[in-house]
Length: 174
Image (cartoon, rainbow, N blue to C red):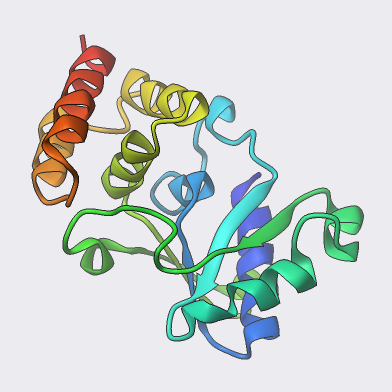
């Protein structure tokens, strides 16, 4: 997904939800901080989104412009409607959201995760594709080890998960 395509998803989501503020929490939120992110980070055809003030409307988004919808068939990408419990994030993540707004969003506001908060969510999820994504972020110098460890300290996870995440972060910066 490109930044232009993400802006289209933000615009469409805002229109469907009849709201101006949309949160982007999946991998494509990297496009908030890095509009021209490396290709290997942009392979997903979906943007995980929800309306900021009405996260329960994720199903409405999914049903309207989600996977298998006419929107996806027309454009080749889609919105995955989620809610505010989809990702485990560090305390204070909302204060670090990155704004994507302008002509291409029809001035709707897309709020993308800060890249370090995104990486923490992916370390917590721990799927192979998430770890590969985080390794690419580190390899391209898009994340900083010390910031990640600081955000990890602000994340509610078990001690076992915290130790595993610390090891994975260290490995990605070795």
